View (tube, rainbow, N blue to C red):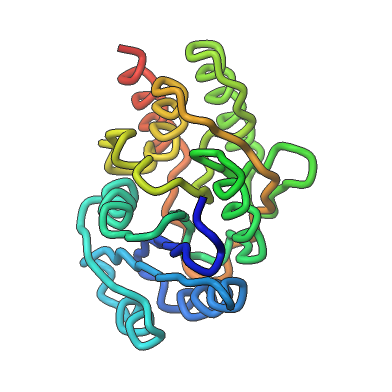
Length: 228
């Protein structure tokens, strides 16, 4: 296990029209990772056509581009990352930077993947409507029954990985099915996974990209594809 002085932390943030949020996100990451070796990787959608990438680059982040979807952007960022610990984080200020150290600690003590959960003691959400709560619980139930896992949250993107793990997962989902694909493949491939409590904040500015029924169908399709 690398020491804190030597290990590199990579924070990967897919973005799409987040110019009103990205500066505060990066500031929060920098504050919490003061004393760590770290890199911040922004994977911006080329269709954004706003100042997200410009602001991020000005603040010292590495910026690359994608034009497919959240999953594809995350996969690209994970491949680009050089860290010993890799962290996936949203760009809308819904993920608390204060939780970064918990995600890092879980990898440092031996887990391969650590995922935030809004549905265990200490977690919660200010920004999930009831219909999505029911949908999430349904997907959790389905995955746990089919794959013998013990997840409490299925559709949450705040998580960390040990170096090399994302490549071994063989991820393919290009959209909002990426979190579900990660959860399923982690179990199928025998990785050590732990959930930690996470509090999802309300989106600070701009419009959310998730569409309940369209992306619910994407998640269900992801589950079905990974059964076989």
